[in-house]
Image (cartoon, rainbow, N blue to C red; front, side, top):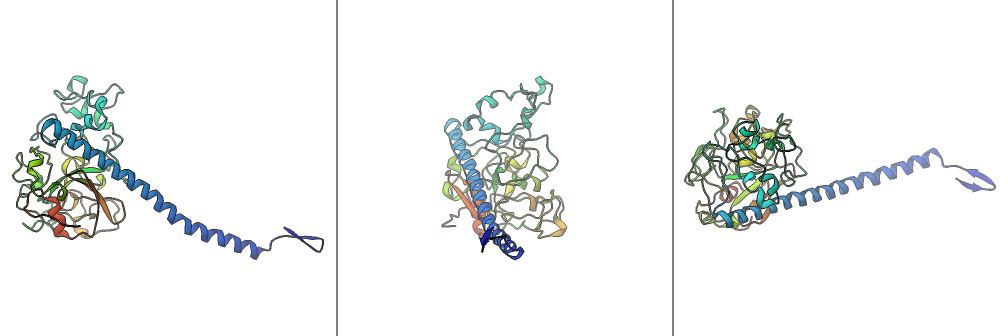
Length: 325
């Protein structure tokens, strides 16, 4: 209020409404900037997580002369590549608690190592590591709350991934949707032959010499959303998305099998066991996803990347190299 000729005068209703409108406009202008800043911070953390994976993979290779395998031909201990690199990601105390020879059987669990009962009375499969989730990823593995989830999975490369529904095989043309080395369905091979990329659940041994297209031209690990895949039993299990259940055959950020998706490209193929759609890389970042390349660098790849280039990045030995992308 202010004084005019000895009298106190308050603000009029119109003046108050104008002030409120100005404040509302300022808030509306500020909120997007705040949201962008928060997303920038989340992307930075997501990128750093992948950087840690890259360091761990190469340290593992230095010790074992090969990259970690994603499984052992359907055999015990039923773990993927992520538990194998725990000691190389400052998680040696957790790794040392796991019974890898008889799994959790000695502790009242199953014969799978991920079912080991830990001193805190949790099964290993319920325990997450600080780097396994991207802050932008709000997925929770559907109803699999008994499994710690991951936002990152190993790359099958340019691989065949037929769907459970034979009518939902949109990306299954040889030398278009998968390269000559990617003929084994879902990467189910115990040798490098038949695997286009770097990791599969049956455990072929891949070393750096087998990346003949160049380590800077080959995808190693990328972002995934566990809710979009029926293989959602956490990052411990060899037979789930956080291991090696993503192929570049599926276009980047295809959300057709994701719950409540607003980006349905084929309404007839939304079931999560339509693997020709669900076994792909995707993220909740706007416009693309982060990837770790074999040389340890991190790239944010646009969802509008040329599809052929995307296949070349998936294959480690297809004979094609990639320039700028």
